[in-house]
Image 1: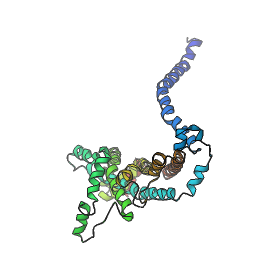
Image 2: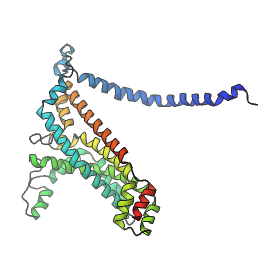
Image 3: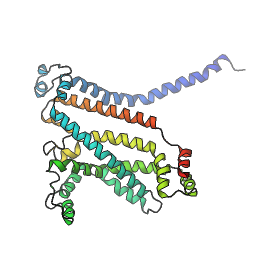
Image 4: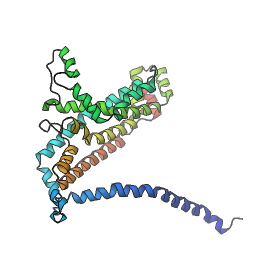
Length: 317
């Protein structure tokens, strides 16, 4: 017969497992606290001060201003220009990037495609290419006189366009480059999503008379719904942090037409040394991204998704 001590063994074992689990995750949690939480709290405190180059030289010049930096943002036309440019970039570039990524994923994952690994690597190369090298190439492509893009347009009788020097065309030029630079990452995610779709769903849809378009509409798209949600949220977050492309290509010009919120944060903090104001800008951007991410997640949860049986029935429709 088991004794009283035997009855306590399962609970004791669970406690040991819990303690071991905490010990395993402790180093990671400590690193997160040191390199993430502490800087975030410090930046939040910095945003409530007028920390500038004078305070950097002598801390006695540092003053606590409360929410004054955030109030200044509301009346700063440069901030609203940067926020508008960033919103336009996200609204235009995110759907285009997702569409290009999905199209590339469908092509490299097609049954008739040969050398799939080679094409995936080639299409992923822009993601790992140094932005400086890519910017040099794209500057030549956008050159108003000898650029390849203007030469192609000349074949159709279109006058040369100063892509990076015209406020009307500078942001679309940045969008085009950003889509080319980043679509390969989402393409890999979409390829993984496509390969997780059970082949029997396509077989059932084909038996019921569904063509290629109906199979894509009623099987592929519903089954990729979780992948779409992840890609959309991550793309939105990444695009709101637009910095490298305008910094390298246009420095925010011409006439602030490519100035983004992150670029404005950099200029305020490290060129004009208004570090407190720059911290406030970064927290406003954080709040915007957080709200939009929560909204997108809630919409995804409310919308739900089709599971395999529902997708199969959709393919039979």
